Length: 109
Ligand code: SF4
Ligand code: SF4
Image (cartoon, rainbow, N blue to C red; front, side, top):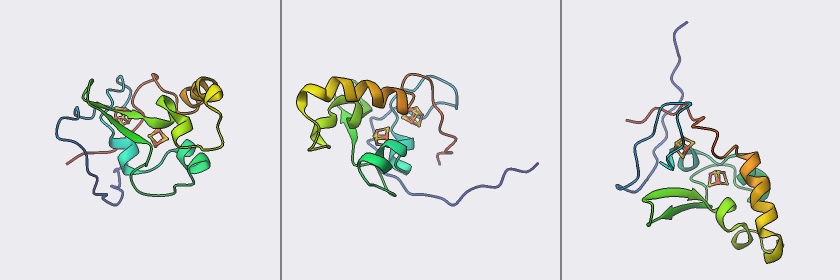
């Protein structure tokens, strides 16, 4: 079967960001997936349906992107008490399957 390319999307990422790995390899924080479209967590909690996720954070120290909903969710969710942040972040980690490996089939040109 011939793979049909999906419509192209222009995304903006930092020059220092790592190159996107192949699907299944360890996530390196390239930011491609989150810059291309919001994940279900962003859809549900940030009400964002398209565009680069507003919770996508650039981490200067590691020269990689991080999920703000994982790092500091209370900054995006005003209703979330600071003392619940760690609990919520653990849920987000599971929902976005952080650490499982890259699940984005995006092709970068
Ligand atoms: S899941 Fe893949 S595309 Fe998304 S940030 Fe990690 S390595 Fe990049
Ligand atoms: S909520 Fe986090 S994982 Fe989901 S698109 Fe935004 S930055 Fe990426």
